[in-house]
Amino acid sequence: MTYTRRTKDELAARVAQDIPDGATVNLGIGQPTLVANHIPSSLEILLHSENGILGMGPAPAAGLEDYDLINAGKQPVTLLPGGSYCHHADSFAMMRGGHLDICVLGAFQVSATGDLANWHTGEADAIPAVGGAMDLASGAKQTWVMMDLLTKQGQSKLVSRCSYPLTGIGCVKRVYTDLATLACSPAGLSVIDMVPGLSLEALSKLIGLPLALQASSPK
Image 1: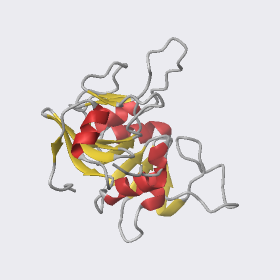
Image 2: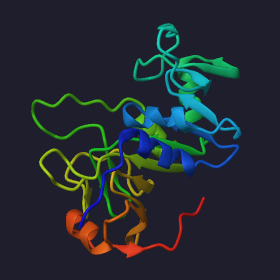
Image 3: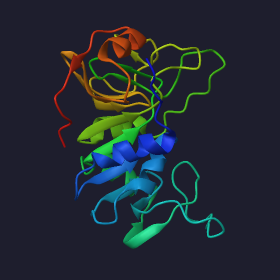
């Protein structure tokens, strides 16, 4: 069986494909920031960054970076026409108040039923980094995760039960990985799509969990 993993940009484009017109979306630190570069200009999607930006645009062209205009991961970004800045407290009020339609976060682990672990591995020498993840996972109407399916050791980050400290319980609706897009629910995992050449049986073996197959990806 031959298949090719999605690159980080291909994965970001896959996430952007599912964001509906008119949505207000937070992009978390790490891989999710790449989604901003793949939002179609024909859609009116409002991107939020927790450090206090509403109306964030894609990364600037080389040489045009303004390091007074950065996202929560300290990367240079742009501001779209009509965009604005706000106090950090106001930004968190948007997150906690249910004003975000979607947040896209990275993760260490996601359970089949949608539990999220993304702030600490529990290792003694690991540095905790919760940031605003708990606020986003509980405040956004939908939480999506964008991550590699496997760790560097080849273990699945999709698990039956998270072994790391939890960020949120049952909050993740979709997981976008380099090999497949999956939905989480109380009934378990279902596959929305897979990279060409990968079978449901092979994906299930990689994850180590039973998988159902969805006919299409709802928006």
